[in-house]
Image 1: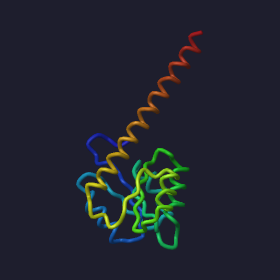
Image 2: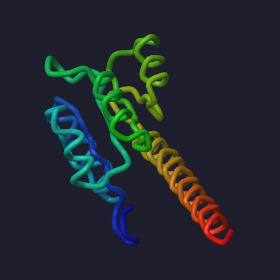
Image 3: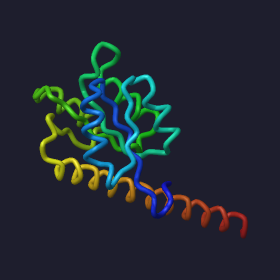
Length: 151
């Protein structure tokens, strides 16, 4: 979990270096953005940075589909919140990404910085709820264990 006072970490995966620069520029006052061009490096960067937030392009070129990477991220850690980015307006792709666990799907070009900030804020709220649920589960498990030992 990030330390108090530090910017939340975001891993941004896109094969377009211009988009990587744009997102980093738009978010750098609020988030620490780790830009990743090669989708094969995404999970390593999630681990390295401790990020719980990922911005993921659906079309990553020939290396890998963003939808495939979304599934890998969710299989690795279902608590990571993924926001999909796409220039391809396809209802099927959007529905697939949401069904596979994406938090949101935003359309390129990202002319509305506030829309991106709002999506990230909503994802952060889900992360906070997820962490609270885990704390409560651990507390219940500890209490049940103490009752068992006390008997």
